[in-house]
Length: 462
Picture (tube, rainbow, N blue to C red):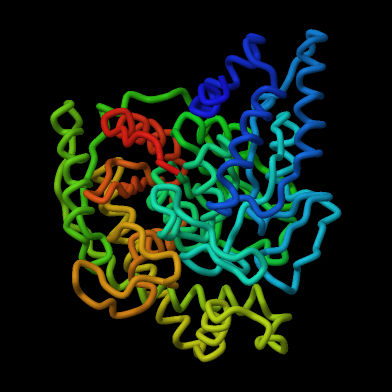
């Protein structure tokens, strides 16, 4: 029964719970057993909130027994990224500076999933302050990929992705600046959604007007993502960018959509196995009657544009740490220095270039409803490496080029989701990124569900 529970979707678990075929405590105990078995190797959860989870699960069972109404996430274990505040639960940001930090309030997202009767099972690992594409820090060490524990799960929401892939919880919350929900989703064979800017309020934040980074969910299916978004994607008075959205629309007929497939949106090259797998997924959509057209969309100039604008965001965010740089990780130091060494003219050039690229994107999305492109150009790299050196046998021009397909899309405030579409010859997941106009999350998730159904990858061996 334990294995049966673990391999259910969140939607399926919810249905069984509300029909009283399984209890919240049974769901929790199954996941706690899996955490005890797998987490010492995977290192996805860095602060297990077992007592909190038991109290929440018991409350759900008691209310169901009494015939009371429970929330849409009732009894579902949720992992929370260790950069997101959780009242009374240790939140370190992956930094020695916060090693003993316990917040006295919840983030808006956490508050909402609690109100929806979710079970907060623990905090998930992240690189320091969520800066980096490999999940490792000096407080908790490295998280490992359940498909091959010698490899990276990606980052920065790597603990969340690895925990989902190894069935430690069915839902998780994270954040995405340059791809931190989509990168680990691709590496771990799960689904990660970067929502439209403003759709998911978070904080209270020190930078409430910052619009390059967003927060959002990951899960093992698009339907589970939709379940979580229905809870967290609503306006909040403390978030100035928060917007009314139409995510509650019914599932649409995706076969009426006009879809573009772009093999290399960032102009960096793609490893052959990744390219073949993504092309096969696009071809399978065509064979199933979907309108898919091979197109060219060159956003390669967005690579420098993003790093320039991100540099300014990082300086804004870590202004109070400028006199403590020696206590920070090299990834964060490098980003702060990038921002400090830029001129106002550099930022103006980047903003003007972003406007030009945005014109290209909007022109494409006026013709096509959605864009498909490989989430990443590579499969997972060794966990000891900070980043890979080569893409398709060619040395990267910049250490960050390997995340260019995700970080470029972050420039535009539009939604994007990574969905698994196959495995490499070495049995490693490959993700396909689906991109749409503002507020098109329903379209993205509906198409992602079709793609996942056509391209099942099975379960991670670890």
